[in-house]
Image (cartoon, rainbow, N blue to C red):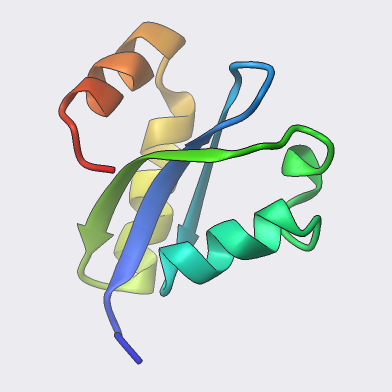
Length: 85
């Protein structure tokens, strides 16, 4: 299993964005889709992975997640536009 931590953004069916971290983004997306992920994403599917970014450690991923969550929506959309799904 990879030891690379990822920060990721999901687009929910209501066009909101969810930000999280994971070692395996695809497995985590599946958990979200099954209703076993974050409470926020339950009932907001289907979910689409729109952005992911590799981080060097869990601590770095948590810091980056916090920074992304503090961004306003236009800045998040600009990040998504960089094309790293």
